[in-house]
Length: 196
Image (cartoon, rainbow, N blue to C red; front, side):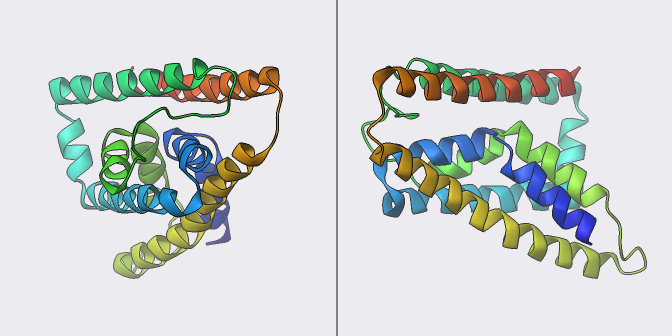
């Protein structure tokens, strides 16, 4: 189970659409307003976990046309987010929107987030520690997963808030934006590689 917990930490803490956008919401709108977005991400991730555990995701993604369309939508959305980050200008503002992203936005992001499906599939199909009691194993995995998921996302939200508070030079802001966009492009590259 410790191996599972370590895998959860490493897979969730690494930059992906969820944590990068969470930092962006924190930078743009603050911690309190970002909580609704993180709640949407949490509920969306729970839905992805249920789809993976139940086999529904495998069933849907087994259809080549559906898989291609969903992969295309995911990649296009991630490229859009990367472009928004890269071209945010000389200030730290990973997300440019007139209203703070909320619960619905978090849910929608997780629904098309290829990292969410990959992480859930890896975690719930591997790391068996109770093969004779699958219900117990899945329950424990869900608890451990969420005990790690929640603080990591709250930490990324707070990191965004802290970045907003810093008095960084325009060059430093641009460097942060480009680094975040490069991380998002890395996620896109992994999604394309996984789809082939």
